[in-house]
Image: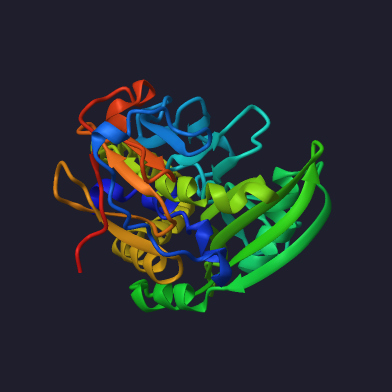
Length: 366
């Protein structure tokens, strides 16, 4: 698990926004048998195929992810100024989005984990001030954090905002609680929020999810985890859900980068003041204990809360997770993926697919 130590708390554990998926939107995976190649040489119907290429995080090569052809990747590894304090600057933050266009009319946005200081523990510090690199701010529930803090900052020009659904995720919070081995008293709260709103002349649907960790006692800080925002025009959101799922499950960390980042973070922590080192040791204890916890929770949450299936990689034989939305799924030997809603489509006869070794990835036999 060491290779995931840095990335998991930041992006690889992003709480799947499909947890907000309504029951009526749940569909059964397609098991339609592909027609013979001779009958599938016609071009795919418009809007029935997505081409995804593996993309390397551009700033430090921290991870790779599938990116739809023609989409924009923004952000990546972020380094905060250590002069502001150690609590959010010791380790790298990862903040990035994949966007269909410059306006982000269809977009997935992974937000960084940030730690905040409970003002009740530092009464001489005003709300909004800086305490050892943490914003002083009262503890918020996951729902309030998404609605009152995250959404307004990401969409300051949104109008006609309507909360369609709030879905508490007590099972997810309970999983964090049960697997937290830290001796520090800690509470977890998880939820997802669905909103609709108008922005730039488009009526959007956005699904957001987050976990809030509240470390209590004399430590008194809290942190957002697994914070993810996914949006599309409201009329198109359900059609985009299989693509969102494919992108999310494709995230892969770079073990060499993670190993180097861990060493660097340890060195930066050792250079802090004595009181800062003490707090960082407590933070490090939490992160270390969270390593295995987060990996298990991501898997369990994504299977239990969302509609998902297990697919067999036709080149490696390994099991891969993806949504159970109706589609056909094809993989190349280098990991590129093509998703189609046309059961007669075969990417081996599609010049845009860029490969001729695509094999169909079917649902794992039960």
